[in-house]
Length: 218
Ligand code: 2AM
View (spheres, rainbow, N blue to C red):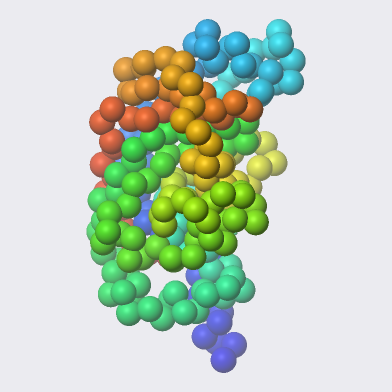
């Protein structure tokens, strides 16, 4: 009935503990601060500015939005396909409000978004809707062939007028491309360029992020 429908959240996901949010936020800011000073990045500056001589301050370029989290299921208050099935799934109910340690294995940047890639364990994949990557095929051709869970990420920031849903699509796009060119070995890991302003830093030491599986109503 209508009551049931209104009780569905905007989305389910893993919410980073506040201490972890600070840590991840700082790591991302340090990365952006360094990235825009690298010669290898400046060489491709037109990807971001459209003009060769212009500089970009990546820390200013991206806006941060709300509490850091990894969305598992976007429900749109019940309007999204499969929302109520997901919410009713016993595995979801059982895991609700439990603590999970997510492994953040890479940071990525595009002219639209900045995010962290999340590598899910088999246990965590049980909370991940199995058709996510297949349903992304229309937006990002090639997604359907990627392993389940490939879209898992934490949005760290979006460029002006860009919605956070873009972050997962940007990640999927990078993952469908051939290995990027290694441009720099940074303290945090190796930095690869994938063309068209797409950068990915594979972290030497993944960030272990304590989270709570829950939902957001807004
Ligand atoms: P995100 O997971 O990339 O951050 C509220 O908008 C949250 O739901 C955001 O976290 C956002 O993106 C996610 N979201 C919005 N629309 C979505 C969609 N169509 N599919 C998956 N996630 C979506």
